[in-house]
Length: 356
Image (cartoon, rainbow, N blue to C red):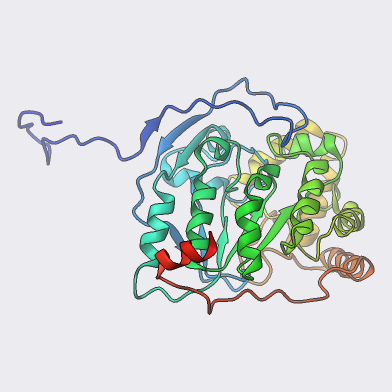
């Protein structure tokens, strides 16, 4: 929009905001993904994110990958502990309710990924899906951005890892199985607790624990390398469940496992403490003290590489020992999964004919 010349202003132009509202109506996930529809008293709003790049690069030694892909920013799952919440503040939104109800959508995610793979400068390597917010959050059922990106990964034969806490990933088993047959994919299902009541409080719009175990079973039954991530481990709240989670995951076909101790960066501290005092008033003080034990006196988070995801101290080491012993007991992490990069191709037309 053009206005007449305005005194004391640098421009008379008022271009449209690149974050345009998207009017998306969709039904709650059906019983195949949720046992019962979550409460949706507050409507979720979606905005178009016209970012011109799709891959994010990190230099963290704590992560086993350099590149990640996130078709959504913000997450309707509403996990109270989510470390990604503060990233929403860079968009002018809050890390609280707006992180859950104002979701940025990248409608051109698949096209941007294909464009990136076509660059001669791209050297094939593992990409994590997702590194920030869940790529299978509820709206994915309608938009299918993650599925379209998986089609691109298969088309170019670039290795990819998926991590989610949503049973919606079962929808894409057909594509993921084809990637697995070429040794181009691994999948991790996050399980924080086996207690459905606790899960609903911690992670209100995710798949219930039983559906996540079912997802591990269905993926592994199709020959897809599947593991479990016990995360986050909240000292004094769910750490005692580590053996049970690993046992259940192994019985359902998981071959590997990882774990992360709770970290509460920036505003997540206040959000978590308020949630804790509201839901577990009689245990709140003990849990906070336990977190201090693994993060240091008067600290609830630690951004240092090497300790930010593992904590430190006697209590943290006890958690790690319990995890390691349980993995041995239930046959997890016996083999290292190494995906292929030598199959990458930009000759996409012959590839489609060959595979399909």
